Length: 279
Image 1 (spheres, one colour):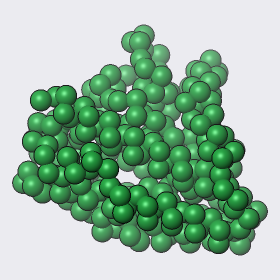
Image 2 (tube, helix red, strand yellow; image 1 turned 90 degrees about the vertical axis):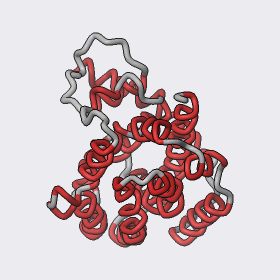
Image 3 (cartoon, one colour; image 1 turned 45 degrees about the horizontal axis):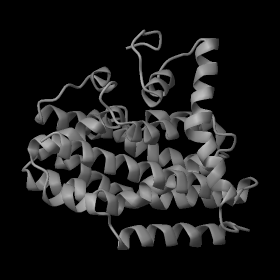
Image 4 (tube, helix red, strand yellow; image 1 turned 90 degrees about the horizontal axis):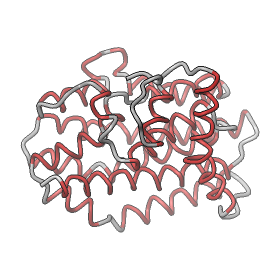
């Protein structure tokens, strides 16, 4: 489906389509307007309400506190996914994240030229892993394809555009914005740092569900539980090196970090709710 399609789309779906095209001038204006409404206004609110973060040490403490609190108090929808969803319901969860899984990490690429050299290398080491070190069998988007193939699902992203929750689009579109159009690269460092750090506990319910249902595709989730331990460390390195090489603005890292927490948790909750309705 191209950006010129006449199908009436939700705001999130439309923004996702525009993010994956070369937009015309009118479409670029539309893209910016959608991002202002859906993303940047919320990021500004988070930044305005942020705690005092005079330096990177204070930022690190705040990020650790958020992660620790989330891990200590998992939401009920994570238990439901891990213990209760049947195969058809779990397929709905997989479908809700298809626009992410089938395109995983593609949205990150524009950040590379925006980072100073040592921070760039730390992020690039993460990207190398995301794309399987050039080995298609190990690339995360391809492992998601394997999971979907096992479940008998379409591998065409276009087939999911009109059924995906706005919460999932909020998650995916935030990363497009943070990598390519956020006014400072610190927003991206915050969003990716949260993603890589939180997966170490947030993906446990996905892995538990897939393993309980006997899916070989559980590998998609267990691979993340393994490799993202290293990725989380690399993002800390990237933030540290950015601080050494450039004028780090900790509050912008925090705004990206907190925004990612909000949208990723919201996407998972909405996916489980959709699965329960699909009974």
